[in-house]
Image (cartoon, rainbow, N blue to C red):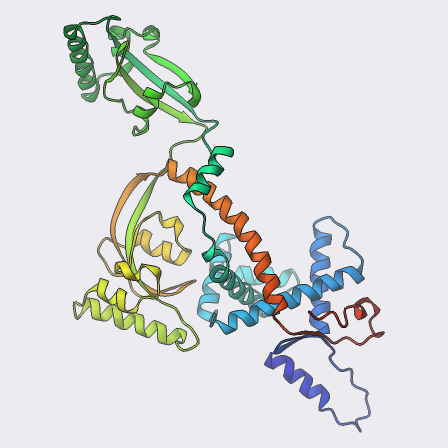
Length: 439
C-alpha cells in the first residue's frame, strides 16, 4: 500500500507549471484502507488472457474479462487485509524455504528456478511477492474455514454406505487346508481333527511349505492344486476367512478356524485392487509458538530456543512447559500429538519427525504454523487400510463442506468491506457500469 501511495504522491505533486503533461495513475477501486490501480488491473488482465490462450481456449471479450479481473483483485485485497488484521505474516525466511521447496519439486536449484521464471517473462521479485500473498491467503483460509469444518463419524458411515472407497475391487489370493470332520462328529473326532490342524500350523511356522502340506493332508477340493483357491473377489470370500485374514500380512497363515466342516488353515498369498496400507507412524510431542501482532517472528524464535534450553539444561518438564506456553491444541496433553503418519504433517514438520532419533529434542525450526521444538517418543508399523478408507471419505466430505463454507465466508467478507469503484464514467465504458455497484 505504501508504494502505491508514494506513486500517487509524486504524480499529484508534479508542479502545475511543468511543461510536459503528466499522465496520472488512475485508481480502479478503493478497498477499505487500500487501493487498486488501473495498471494493476491491466497487468492482471494480460496475465489472465495469456493463461487462457495457453490452455487452448479463447478469452471472453475484454468488457467481460475486465469486470471479472477487477472483482478478483478486490476479493484478493479483502483477504489480504483480513490476514493482516489477524496477524498472519510470511517473512522472507519462510518464503525462501517455500521457494526452495518448489524448486526442488521441479528438479531444479533455486538459481535455475529463478532463471526459468525470468525466461517466461515474469520479474522474479514480483513472483516472490505474489507467492507471499498466496501463502498469506492460504493460511487465512486454513484458519478461518478449513480448520472449522467438522465431519461426524455418522456422516462418514453414510458416505461409505453410498460410495464404497477402495473395497469394491479388492481381490484376495488364498491358500486353503481343510482338516475335515464328519457331519455328526463325536467330541473325540473333533479333538483329533483339532490336534492335526494345530500340528500342521506348527509345521508351517517351522518353515514347512503350505502347498506341500495341502497336497498331502488337506481334505479340501483344491488339495491337488496345493490348496490354491486362486483370486477371489472380496464378496466371494467366506466371512469366516475374511475375519481371519484381516490381521495377516502377505504369506502368513491363520490359526486353525473351526467350522461345521472341520478346521481350516488359510494363507494370504496376495491382495490386489487395494493393497493393505502398512505405514510407519510416529508418536511425537511438540511446543508451538506462532508469531502474531504482539510477538514478532524473531521473538517467537528466541522464546522457543529459550524453552528448549530450559528442558535440556535446566531439566524442566517438557509437558509442563508445553501446557504453559504452546498455542497448539495439543498443549493440554503436554504437547503429545498421538500416533500419526509423518505425511499428515506440513513438510517442515514432517522432515524433522522422519529423521529425528527417538527421545531427542530437536533444534527450533519453522513451519507454516510458527516455531516448533519436537521430540519423537515412539515409532511403529501400522496397518491403516480401514482408516485410509474412512480418511478418504472424510476428506471428500470436508472438501464438499469447505467449498460451500468458503463461498459463504468470502461473500460475507466481501459484503462487509467498503468498496468504491473510481474509474470515471465515460472514460472507460467497459468499467463505467461498475460505478455505484458498491455493496
